[in-house]
Each structure stands twice: as structure tokens, then as C-alpha cells.
Length: 368
Image (cartoon, rainbow, N blue to C red):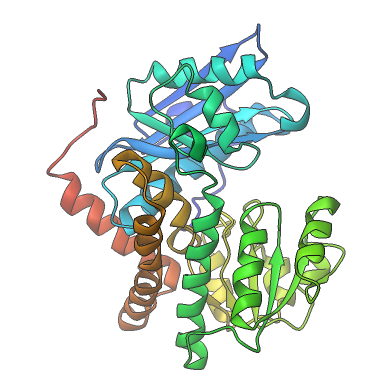
């Protein structure tokens, strides 16, 4: 989904204006455990809002609020475009997960999620893992992405990467006539979770892969597993490489004007959410001759994986559903061509149509 105009700098401006279009925003505060979290439910027109829990050391509460609002809105569009009977929600926990995460904090967070009576279903995101969801689930029934040992879907980054790979294949077909990355050079920014799995899929497909990550051990692990992969120092170095495809797989805002101005890749297809930092970014990317595979279209594999857990998890079934991201990405490109709009706008139109058409039959999800 294309990003909205820049939000006000302070929460005090007008919270209702800042959260326009959202059904509910909840602040979770537990001083005893150190929990400071925000849960945002954007829409439950298609079903309960499902979205991950991001644990991140935000510079300010305002930054955390803007992020959770953008992410939850994106989850509504992602679920709709993926054909799921789910709405959009997201949570952020403010803090450094390497320092602040604890059993007490995660269980306190679980109690807050439980208090929403199923209107919000949580899962993993940046800074949280399946083992963390097991702890959250000790206090809450509305948790997905748990470990396989505890009946869950496990690491959702596996099918997130698989979906991105399918979207990348669709983009390659659109641009070069073949649905393969064999012989192409793909640059991946961020190889901690999704990017690591994506690397393996691309290497297996015959691509040349260049990686970078702010966390050195993540890069070292990829290089040890895939000796043919090459690493560069920073994302700024990576986007100046002779790439065919650029895959942002870390935090949002990846396609800022500076990056687009130097990027040599013909395709952008990655797992990061909210890659377009402002309302004009999609046109800027298109004007630069870059084919953009909308982030929430191609990164829906993880959502599909954890959503399958609600029906009694089957990896094979979830993977088959995630394979449909190839056809969905194709449909986005076809609509963009037909209507003369950017792929980002085309994806929004497809998602909004489903939310409107199906949402009228459902109304607001009241929980269970």
C-alpha cells in the first residue's frame, strides 16, 4: 500500500487525525515488567486483525505510533489481497529486544492481547520469534506463529521468503519473459530471517546473490552456508552494485529518493514493509524505469503461514497457498498495465475492492 502523507511530529497534534481510518488503538503499559506497547487495529471488515509484534528500540513514542499505524494499515491490505478472511492489526513493543525482552514482559503483553477478546491476533515480527509467541500464549488464546513443538506454524519467515521469491519470479517473467532468476544478480538488504531463507531459494534457482546486514553475524551465517554469496558493507554500497533485482528485507522506507536515484536494478521485490516512504514514491520508482513488486503483495507468505495455523497447521497447504503469490503479482502487473497506473496503485485497488465487496457482508469484528 502506498504510504500516506507524513504524519504530525507529535502525538499531541490530534490522535484521531493521526489514526484516521483505524478502528482501535490501544496503549499497553506494565511498569513492573517494563512493557510499553501499542496495538493498532486498522480494520476488521474481513475478520479479526492479524499481524505481528515488532520489538524495536524506537527513538520516540511518536515514531512507534506512526510505525504501528502504517504497519496495521498495511496488514489490512495484505490480508485482503492474499484472499484471507482476516483484517489488519499490528503491535509494537518499545525497547531493545536483546536487552529488554523477558518472560515477564512477554506474558504481560499476552494479557493485554487477551483483553481484546480476539479482535487482534498476534504473531512474530522483527525482534520476536516463535519461542516468544509460546510465552505470550501462556497468557493469551489469540496467538499464532508458535513453535511446531507447541502446535504452531513455526518460523513464518520461511513462507515469507517463499512468497517474495514467487513475486520475484513473476516480476522476472514480466520484464525478461522467463519466470526465473537464473543468471541474474540479486541484492538482498537484511539477511537476519526472511533474507536468509530468500538467499537459499535464489541460490537454488541459479541467481548470483549479494547481501548486506547491519548485524555482522547474520552476514557471516549466510556466507558460511552459501559460499558463492558475496557481501558488501552497507545498504548504500549494495544499491550501487550492478544488480538486476534489489530485495529490501529489513525495515521500511527503503525506496527513498536518494536510493532510487542511484539504483541500477530493474526490479525491486523484497520483504520489507512500507518500502515507499511518501505518496510520490511509486511514480518516482516507475519514472526511473524500475518495476516495483508491491511489498504487501509479495511478502504475504508469512501471513498465509500463520493464518493457516487457525485451521490446524499444514505446512504443505500453507505453502501451496503462498505459491499463489505468483499469480497475484501477475494480476497486479496486468491491472497496472491495463489502467495505466503504478503497480502500487493497482495492488491498492485490488485490495480495496475486496475489502469493500466482502466487508459489506461482515461489518466490524466483535471478537469471541
